[in-house]
Length: 386
Image 1 (spheres, rainbow, N blue to C red):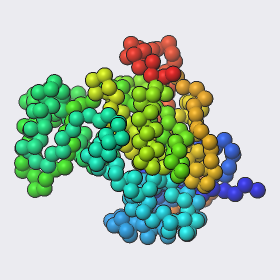
Image 2: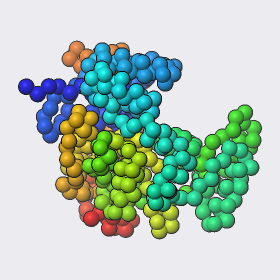
Image 3: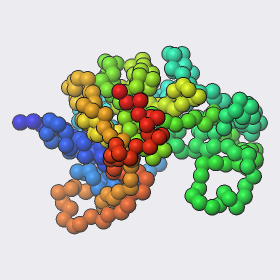
Image 4: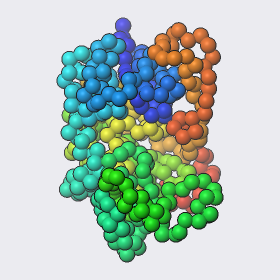
């Protein structure tokens, strides 16, 4: 009899309801139970899980490790996929192993390299991976100097936190004065330089920003799966050019991603992002966790979450290769259930129809675009797929 696998996802993105779906529909028909925890009772991952808990708020990283160890022992967790406090948890890998839990996360030292973007850029540059020009700024004068130098070279300047995930805090600098035109249409990432300078000057604490040129599309996110032995089993690029999405195995993106994943020990699922600086692909960011859009690889015939769980369990899935490069597609908003009762819960105990709400940004379905609707921008991106 095949034993069930018990997987825990902590405070993860709403889009990872699809990660959970793929685990349950794994190609080996292995039974999977999923435990989820979150700080938001309305997170759809709680409704999608077999069991769920609300996480305690205000725990220090050390206290959260103790909480997580208790959860793993009490719930019989086989594989833990941490997002919150990932580095702190990874530093206690052996303690989790002692209670029978494998951590699906890179080693703590590898995570820490990529928590700070300046450290990350310096480290990968030393291994021959191209990076864009960048300036670390902590005050208004440094900010103005960085912007002026980038503009003198013909670039549009942008900034983002030196540490952070996703697009949080990303802004593009403009010198156009604030006017009514900025209040029409949808909010944009553009901010007036004089307003930013004033805000930084009057702030009580220094900022810690990375200022760099705004990089051009296409953006290519390479999803990697690397074993604890350091061998990269999977590297598939997901391209983004405006609304259009696609896939790529172009070496310009894939080879530097494989180099980073292998040489820095980025075990299990990671996401390495590139954009264009002139005619050259350069590193934009490294995420030491599964990407929210990882499930889109299903269009290439890949179930990456299950392959990663196999690795964590000590089973080698071999090389995970696309059976095809799927058609171009886009992402659209969808609906997912939320809990209409308080957590914790057991799915088997639910007998009412769940409330359904729209998840306008994070919970998405795929809409495949037929080849007949190719646009010039898509055609320009197409040679990336081989």
